[in-house]
Length: 462
Image 1 (cartoon, rainbow, N blue to C red):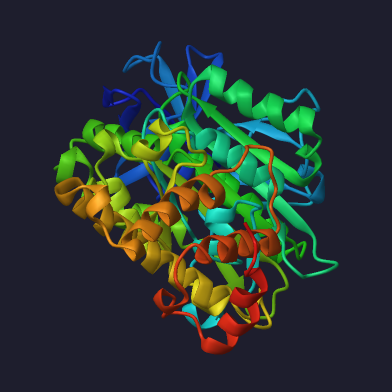
Image 2: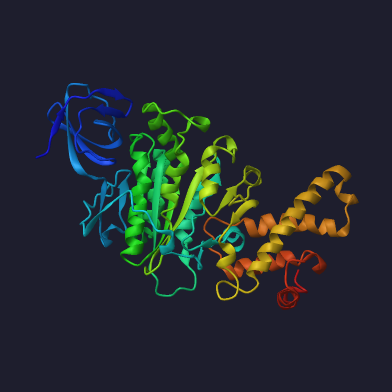
């Protein structure tokens, strides 16, 4: 027999407190009835003795201490899943908003996932081609990796996310099924409409699942949106053997929602007012990416973080950097130059890149070319600083060639049109054309055999 609890002990923001609770468990879903007719769902986020703290998904407006009854459901939040979920659009609570009705459920999964034994993980090896030269050539995304994008307000991270969704595909793995799970958290209505209209009109919606949580939705829904998305990805990957790319934007909105709920609970804040468990909470999301042994599918993750005040040391990007395997950093100075995508390769890196590129994966010259481009572009910045002191005319011929290389690097390799989908071969050919602008003796990160094969083949070009 299910017990119903009459009344509440306390209401604070999106949270309510219920006392005298028996046989409840953490993350359990509850059903709250207001004035005997309106029903709202909530979940238990804290248990102390027989006292439960419940977050209410539609907020606490209209709720008083005496006009409610609360019923425990006995289960956590679950998501109805089947292969039919592909091509569907949902809100932040996984309710259909595309007018196609509910999903026919083959199964239901707990959205909190389950702990993955590290021994059960397969080491990522193959790369995912995004069609964006700066990423594919220099910050290569590896299948099963978690590679965040660090952006700032006003930069083109929304356009970059859309371009990745349009162009991402498996490289040299014929017959593999590929899907994208896209989750937006706390975005404005115009941005949500931009995502939805772009994906629907482009014809790629059939290979993706979309979750949209807008800014005026209850803040507590923002906490579960990425978990619904990742549960969908895990189902498609580990039950349907698909290779799944998950894009989460914006994790800053998620973390700020977590801070608001923590404050309502009266918890002692840590850095910048965020709860002390921000690291473990973010890890519970990011660590759901990967490849499992004995499973054919994979989950690759690209979370997008808008850095408050462009501060990369802010707790959200800082902790994200500790958990994930690299970062793609967008730069305002490049954006002001009219360069899209404004990817600054100097602070960007992919820690798994070295194990998924080169002979047998991409092309034999890829690792050396990437290393040389990083080193050469770093030299450009040093020479630019020197030129500001002594003047560009006083530079040596070699230094002047670096200045030419730096401008060409940003204009030809980093910059590309939003609808331009470059193959890796095209990216590497552009890279070699740029390296030819430098004297051969400056290319000390490339093997002599590769220089003889690729550098000479470009001699005589203009």
